[in-house]
Amino acid sequence: MVKHMVDRKGIIIYFQNKKVLKEIKKYKINIAYVNQGGKYLVGYCDAEEFAHIKKELKQHKLIRKIDESFVEMPTL
Image 1 (cartoon, helix red, strand yellow):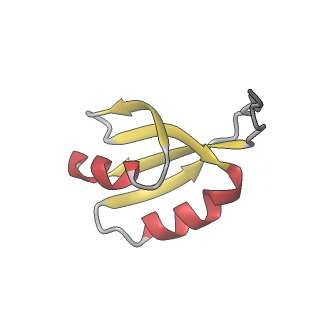
Image 2 (tube, rainbow, N blue to C red):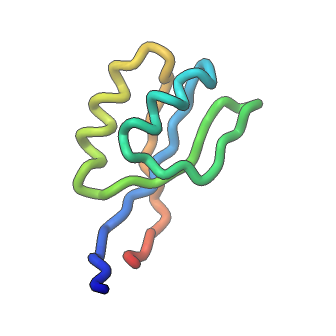
Image 3 (tube, rainbow, N blue to C red):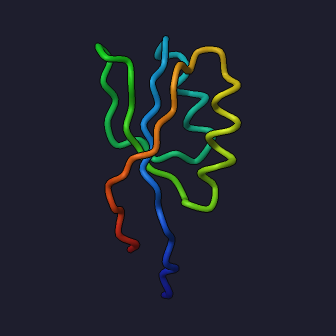
């Protein structure tokens, strides 16, 4: 079995309501942590898809802000 190397990029999404989590999962974002009180999540996605995902999610009315994580994410 051959594993493909995939570059990942960390993403931090601030949201207004946790109902948006279902929408976020549709964009192939692997969610690592959800903070209900601060209403944000930390996850990662493919580096190649990051710009597209960020553009699409910015248009969603329940998402307040999207940041890129600057922590290096090694490929597996």
